[in-house]
Length: 53
Image (cartoon, rainbow, N blue to C red; front, side, top):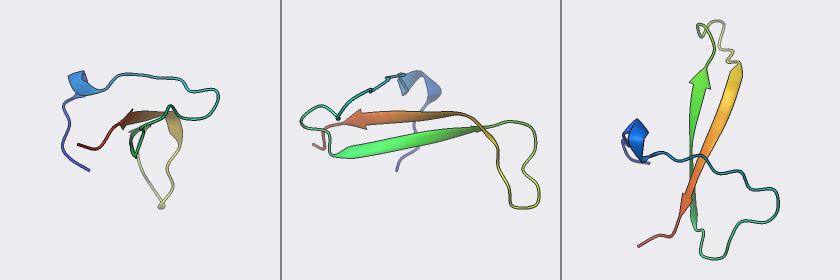
């Protein structure tokens, strides 16, 4: 999926279908607190969509 710098991530809220041309969705998970017992709680799920070149 690539190693993207934080500055390259842009928030986008999609309330309906994805725009035409979207072929890839990447997401980053921000963990609250520590990961323990194989459980993760989520604060935000951030998606980045774009056209494949």
